[in-house]
Image (cartoon, rainbow, N blue to C red; front, side, top):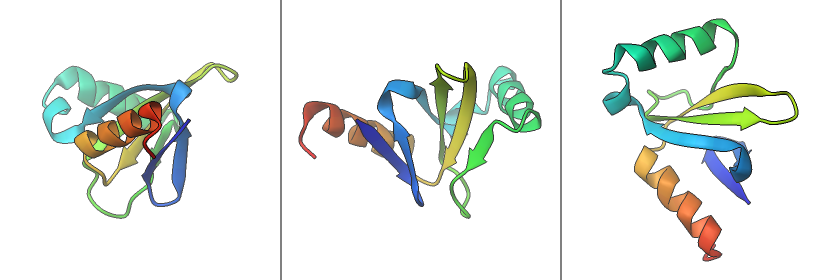
Length: 90
């Protein structure tokens, strides 16, 4: 199954570790440090020209690397899309 996270970016659901709301999670210094470090490592992909509302953490088993996708879609919207895909309603 796949999850459309914005623009022309589609992720494989089996690689998704979590979907997070940026506003709520970036309050934590640990989350800010995590995102900063991934940005420095070139592992952050911004899929929007707008202010991002969420980020999706993915892990690719083949490359054994994490990637972070910044999306203009709300975390709740991405979660619903993910659930719909898993239930086969879409």
